[in-house]
Image (cartoon, rainbow, N blue to C red; front, side, top):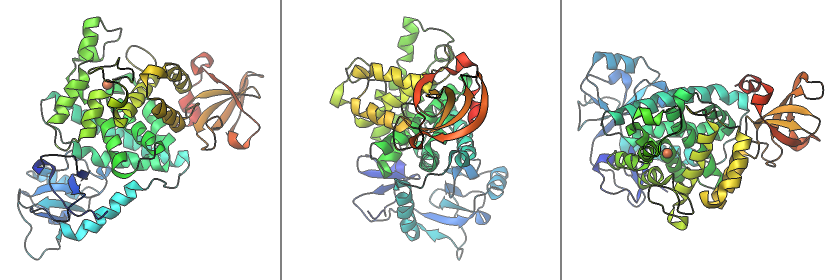
Amino acid sequence: MRASKFVKPRLMLGYSLELFFRGRILHRNSLTIHEFMRKKISVNEVCIGMYIDEICGSWMDHPFWKKSFLLESDKDLATLQNSAINEVWIDTSLGCDIEAGSGAVLEEDVAQDVENELAQISAPTAAKIPLHEELDRARALLAEGKTAITSMFHEVRMGNAIKVSEAEPLVDEISLSIARNPEAFLNLARLKNVDDYTYLHSIAVCGLMIALGKTLGMSGRDLKDAGIAGLMHDVGKALIPNEVLNKPGKLTDEEFEVMKGHPRKGWEVLNVAEGANAIALDVCLHHHERVDGKGYPDRISGDKLTLFARMGAVCDVYDALTSNRCYKAGWEPAETIRKMAEWREGHFDEKVFQAFVKTVGIYPSGSLVRLKSGRLAIVLEQSGKSLLTPVVKVFFSTKSNAPVMPEMLDLSRSQETVVSAEDPAQWGFDLKKIAGI
Ligand SMILES: [Fe+2]
């Protein structure tokens, strides 16, 4: 597909045929450049009064949450010019222009660049790198993502409209991290503190939706939409009173009714947000529905639930159960998969649940397992060969009741087998420390 039409999201009336990409919309059926002026210039050419329409480069390289804004202060100008960013897009219909004869590049010159970038994100099979090589990047991505989502929730609480397109670079970075090594990001995102839950849950579900989407054969725009929908699915919780949202105990029936209002509140937020497409709206509204029609808020069932909504339901439950909450400690990942398998009938779409298990494993990364030899090990990665043969780090002998020299073992190439999942709380192990994360 040749991507070549750029239209600002705020100019659009409907979203069914558009592909959103980095704050622009690429039409599938048209090749015309829309008539507004965007120019790509060096940050050294930026002046007060220019409208910054897009910052080029990774969102991690600059301190601005908003990608589009009128540059009005010397402080912001200095921040921009001292950042790792080299170029920005300006919109001369909304702010000052650059002087004639500059090196500005018009949009049509980079249509091919956009197409190439889209193809890169669509690539389903980037070479996987070792876990330890991705951990630092995944950790930084989570920290930056938490800041961004905290800011977005704050905007919602203040009654301000949000721009979903501004979250796209974050989703792109998460997608690339998962392509390099899914366990790094997904494992770290699961290990959240009670105070971080609401924000990191959004980011974790984003990552799970992308990883699950890949297992289901999605790529490109579909995969990105799945990630954005995951990131936005609980935005309505920003409007739930804190005493209900973070109550350190069981909710009363009245409080639970208030909590159950968050999908519709989120839908209302996204419905007036810039750049929220039908998939994000749908997952936000329907991630608590069940395939037997006993969920909420609309009690819809079966085929009436979209694939994205069914994916959202599974990812949301898994991350909620494995996370530490204000009213309970998180369950172990292997135990969570076992319990979800027991409940799946009625709750989850069977094929989506099977794909989810294939994504995270029967013994997901971070699980403590007992091997046939009596040794204990922590699961580090899935081997890709069998759900029952992950890569583990052996560190303890139950026979001698003592630590052993740590040993990495790919169970797909070993005589060792997993005989059971173990509860690390009963053993008193700090699995984060043992796993090196
Ligand atoms: Fe929710």
